[in-house]
Image (tube, rainbow, N blue to C red; front, side, top):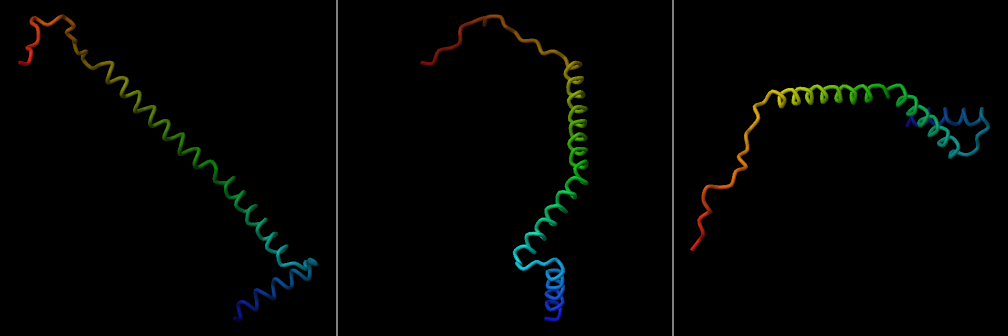
Length: 92
């Protein structure tokens, strides 16, 4: 209860100093500050996700290069395309 009184007193003091008569304006302003803080936080941290995606791309490229090298050195399987020597057996 004492904490609620202190909080109410602080809000009332600011409202008086700023000439605010509507609590909705106070909450709107607090919401604005929250969104501004979120925006700043996202902008500060935006490099980390980009770096993570770039690192993943580099790893995938390296794996792909390894696969390409492995297939280039793999023996080629011969495919026999000649006709069969005899006709397939027919079912009775």
